[in-house]
Image (cartoon, rainbow, N blue to C red; front, top):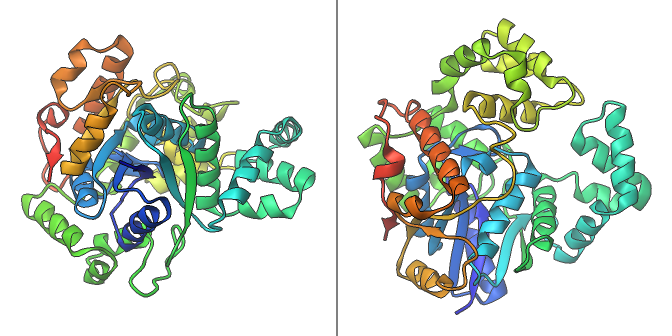
Length: 398
């Protein structure tokens, strides 16, 4: 058995994702694929378009054998923590041979060298100097790399999937058990692109089409995804646009004190005052984000902080790595992966709510937070759903 791992959001699953899975199998010779997927909230700091169970089902219908959940604490975190959480879950299974990710450059050696450059002490010190003069984290790091190591690595860091891939490589290097990293060059539309090519479009463009009732989105996804989406619509459990939570988030943010916001992950250097002031004046979430952002604190970082504050996350809760491996969906091959992981996994594997009872207090805390996050997510469905779905929804088996 050869097992390849993938980190994904599948928001929604589209033809580019299917291509990545097929190419990963071709490049690695893998006969089994496991994906770590964001839960009901994604790294851009918003709700996923469909629930984690519907998206996990779509993945298993299209080439993934086992889908594991990246808990919300890590799925809405900055890139370094997102990558660390996801890669640690894959390596903690104890049987993943390769981790595959998409990138713009498609050159694993160049990406690995870029990861080494970012760990260079001179680059880290230069980046700290840049941060002190008000540059954003990404800008400070890229400038340090360009100054000390030239344009080749700077250019790599100017592409979003390259950058995230470099974070996967760094995260993998810090794991006790390390998978071999490979990359697949992205095909079709770029990340967040509005351009549609052949049968490919970015996930963000597909979401826009879905939410604007543009039926042409269906040509960019496998038919099974269309079928799952239609079923969720008929059940009135999807789609779940972030806009449905806007009033609730604005209400919450107006009630938080600056010192409460200061305890939110990734808040530093007085950001809480700027966000608090924006929350008191903003009439929409976009107003809040625009008022709070600066050159140092970009829009994406503000979005993630606001969502984390709304969900009540604190810095104390959000440190470290995931304390368990939760299964969302699987097929027969997925069951074989779990059998292979038995006795090898470095973390407990959770397939039902009662499995949590025997785990550590830290695991119980993260699972409880995830249940709360799902209860809040259920406010964004077309018909508001009752609490408790985290405890009552089982593993999707195909």
